[in-house]
Length: 325
Image 1 (cartoon, helix red, strand yellow):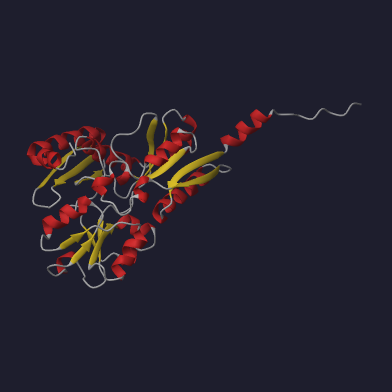
Image 2 (image 1 turned 90 degrees about the horizontal axis):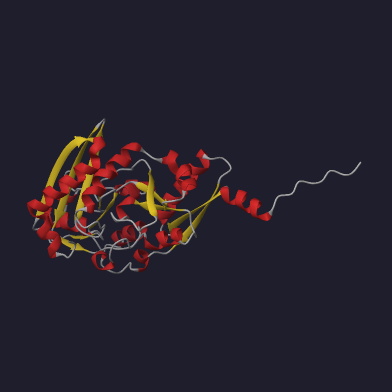
């Protein structure tokens, strides 16, 4: 009897089957970005046993401009190269800190999942002073965020506010070297990297309004990539998605950038959402702030309406003065 003919599969089919079990994540190489990408990888592998998830570490314009002003560096400086990698099919998805993602996305890409958010508050960190209010006149405070700088100057015009760039570890080391009396960072980043004990004071969101999307990790992929959309869908957190719908709709009407002094934070309670927005002049002398509430199902509409109120109340003049509108 003739030997059985072995089953054969064309190389093309074998490659397609292999590729179906591989997902490539584009990520920045900072410790926090790598933590976020590894977290997403672990979640995906848990949801889809057998799926191979690899990281594609990259250096972005934001990383390369570490010594430049955030205002001069421009929009989307931490996401541009990651998005180009996806469009060129060098990666299937990108993991972002949503506070770094501009309101407008490049054609062909879509934000498709948002993870449950970490603590959205700003953190006051100091080795010698127990609270922001305890800082003496003339104390030097470091932060890279124009949003934080403007709110800090509005509350404490007696302080010396200075730019402080670099990753979380670098900023903490500058504090430990006594170059600053205090620094302002995001609670979320400190906690995710194991530095939660360094938080001296968590600043309430109604006192220091956070950045748009602060504390939320988002996943972006090619808009026509149905396979990746399906794989990441289980990671979506409904409350985070509602919060972002409100905050980003507001931001889109206010310049759409993470590098202007615009802040916004939404709180979802059941079927309702409350959104607070703020626009401040860089010197802190002009601050426009307002809150809107309504059904969570209309989060985006509420965000756009709040932006219109802020613009009418004086935010337009502030944004035009700094070239953001």
